[in-house]
Length: 329
Image (cartoon, rainbow, N blue to C red; front, side, top):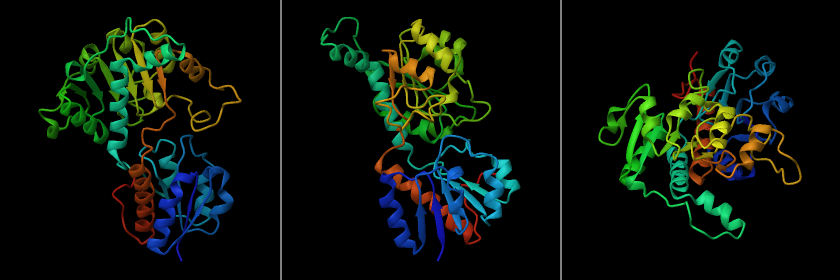
């Protein structure tokens, strides 16, 4: 019987995993550990599925090869944690799940756009201190707003359609503009988008060209009444520059679902501890920051699809087939 190991497994994934194992008559072993801490479990398995934000250490790949593995599947869209060339050198076919549920992230970004436009984060802070005044917090109706989307792919395109249905003006910046979004997205330069948008929403992959995509000079282009949503990857935004812009009120507010250095902090119980990352601690303390722990993907459909699609790829490769999700050199 085919045996597959899944690492970094959460309790909420177990129903989907058990259903898949029963439907396909395979054995799926699970562990909450990262792959580098679970190498002892890879000696007698046929396939491997991982999920993590921190890089897989280089010493892991030759051990997986030594244990006879031929593939490495990540049940996430991002795969920057995998050293793909090194994996290929060790005979491992790498796959990801590029479109587990575009609506999950798009709907989350839309919610945060509403929160920024309606100043709910500021009202939350006031009400928590028994201050129920309205002064200075008049909001913007979305049909009168201009929303800029940087990265108009699967997720960004889905968000654009949701925004257009609400009669917002939608600007887009992408190196490969989509013709199927004509009449929905108005493509402009990055600078024009930053200058005109009431809220900017980021939906780009993490790659060498997107690291530090927004820095101090970009924040200077934005309206001082504008907001920013990042539901893509943390390093897309230069965090120190963002903090400086927020403190100087160069921009009004930000909703961050992902941040540089989030690994030890997000999805951890720190109620009795301090936040170890000083930049995240600073963001957490600012009143014009909405901070969520990388949960834009975390829906019923997305979790099911991440499990199912990753395991489908494993079985396809083990059976000698080719997955459309293979990461090429």
